[in-house]
Image 1 (tube, rainbow, N blue to C red):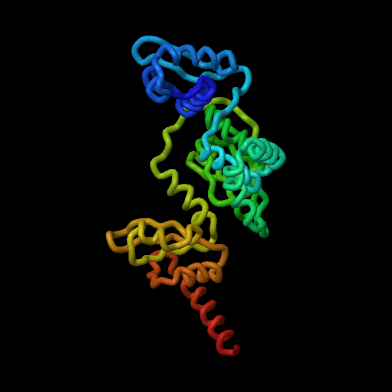
Image 2: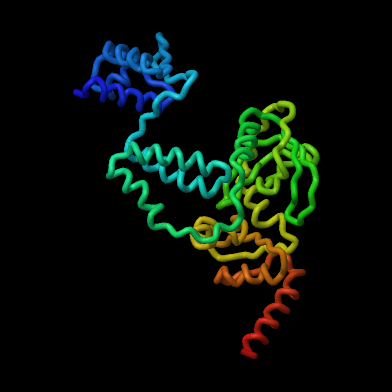
Length: 317
């Protein structure tokens, strides 16, 4: 049987891992009777854990919200996962670097040697190369997430893919992460349709407006976002047919190449976008597969001219 102190730590960990526990379930996990569970719950309350209890059918114990954050109990895998996530987040989200480093220092100070070595291994052998676009601001992400959760309308300035700037009035739905990019999926009240907005193109901090009734999540929200990232914003767009199912092609093609859609059991459509016919042709070449143009035939002569220019360069070389 566990000692009292070890049992209290185990009880705190169980309460933090799930919203609600029945008394018998806790007793079974701890290997004690119901009376011991009640005594241990009182001990946790004395240590600052706001444990709520309810009786009757469906009753049990739940960890409530107190005035201060109680000590967090983590098992080995949870502690390592938190340390790795903090290291990754400090490079992907701006404005949290100092806080993330402080929290990582606390974790590493408390970790036994075996866990510290696991948590620091990835960082120790990773080279820092050019990071590309600057990370999005954590405060802005927090504002957007809060508006999504509370169903509060937002107004902000926004720069489009072409650099055109203007105000946007939206009802936010979800945030999505795509590599180092963050996107806000929202209902654009001026355009009366769903739109996706790159968070790094939002100017300043958005203004929070009135609450709105929650909208149902569109079933094709993921497809909308993918089209908004890899297809719709570009002036040159092409749809090609490839042999293979969507599942097979998704495993073989890079995510950035375009949006895959099923056509038949044996073939799929790939919708591709780029800023120029040259870039679009480069995307097609990098597929490394036979394709058939389905939409965008007007771009074919311009792409053929690029191929001819490339052939002349190769011959001259």
